[in-house]
Length: 215
Image (cartoon, rainbow, N blue to C red; front, side, top):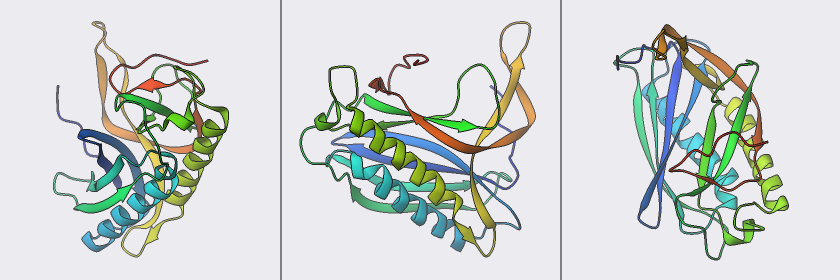
């Protein structure tokens, strides 16, 4: 596979931690409106987004779930600003949890309409108190996660820094269509699309095997 092209004024945020000894990772994207983000402001962004992730999603994840690092990489060039912020944060819901491969799927909505996979965040660390059966989330727990996802999105969009201007939660489209062999066609320039909403399915998903579209 060829290397991915640079994405002007876009930042990759990688959130990482553990569930007991199992490692989890989630990658999200934001863009900034002006200038070039400084190292100091990248540090500020990683710190703020990690704190926001914990206060929204972490509030509904089990106590064995931890957030350990948030890594920020400016994708404007191969030498874009980088920062890795360390954390020592844990989930706030007591009691036992489902196994580390089980996850809640947060689907992020954009203004773009298309067939195929949409951006999702898989949240592992589901407490047993959040499920109603061996395959479904409890209705109240699901509503709480919808509200958490909304608060996370709104919180990210409220961030602003002197070197970069406003921060906007996005996803990056790197591919457009397929060739005659069915291989995805890489765009010359990635296209950013704003995230404007969120949905949480009722089904318990998996971090290891994508289960397909949920009604």
